[in-house]
Length: 577
Image (cartoon, rainbow, N blue to C red; front, side):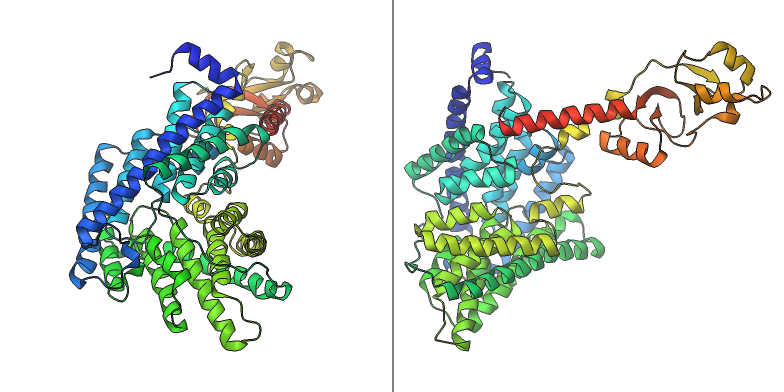
């Protein structure tokens, strides 16, 4: 289904109309954010028996039976639903980062709705995952679908995916700046002036829609000091490094949990049930490990708990988050990382107070720094978290301290681990994605698209004298030799053939690169590597490595020129030229 031709032309040619489309996208995404939040809260009330004004993770106590059975049976239901969906629709759904990095912003709306359902089910039964993955998935998918309907250009389609993600985060956290820079840093991969207007408008509209419908779930107003002492930056930076180490531990924990389930031989559909049972047992200690932790985060800034309890809660919540993702529950770690980071900061402040009361830092400051630092370690986006601190507190000195810790956290993760949670998951699947920067064009620029099909061939058993007669100097640069079965046998260089005085030689005696061939599905990056390894300025393209039937020829000069042209085109798109 496509939009009317006049509207398509307006959106493609006029930046103002793209901004208008982004505003409607923000409105639709804001409605989805509110609907998902209310649906999940209703599920919590029904399954756990909490009141409408209560948050699951903020409960002091829950009855033991639902605390254990709901996550366990809910995990079983999720596993069976996922199994049924997999048999009906055997396609993996890509998330916004992967869509923008590899597929030019193309996303499946049907697949994204399935992710939303799985996320609501996972969070609803108490798994320690957040809804933000579902928020950004549906917002970005709507943007992709609308962009496809208006037949926008590749770069504009990627921008609309970013607008949907920005609207989702802005609506969920009541923070338009946070949503905007979440899109720039994590979904689009870069910031440009041309992209600012549609992204910002989508975020602002979504925030307004969510507030009009009843408000989001992120509502913290911590009391922070008006000034941060210069000496306090030393422990603040140390806390940023601790956040990085905890973030790496959680990401490793997810991988270890998945590996243990894989080795156990437990069917995939049963794994969420076992994971849910483990989460339910942890919930017997404290309900704070359940769900994403919205309610418990607010209590972190208002309640003063003993240091031992805070440290225990960090361990329990981190374990619950790793088990939830590793066992197959669907959701994000954004909000869980905020809650865990706030707990880590609170524990750090308590430990400092035990060491020296003279240089103690307020718990609220350390909680905010830890909240942002751990989120940067797991999710990425230091500016995103800096703006979240600014919009939550309104304090510029506090924001500067948060940014300092975020820089340390980000650098530590990059130097010791190298990935955020999203890109780490791509790495485990074998994808070389470090960010949402568009590299999909490189995969589309294949050998099959660049090769030249016009070429001259000769039989490998042809005498050299006959070859010289049929191919005089200047006729061509190279000739492709074929064996009796029309399979590739090598390349004959014309000057070398005419320089050979022994006419008793056959063509097969002077061929080159007989064992080095290109395949049509190879990317330009792989082709350039083949040219360098073979030290050749041209290689033959065959249909496959078994039949070796020649279908084309590619020169290194042409491949590098196409590569350079595409790089220049992407540079101009990023700079808005």
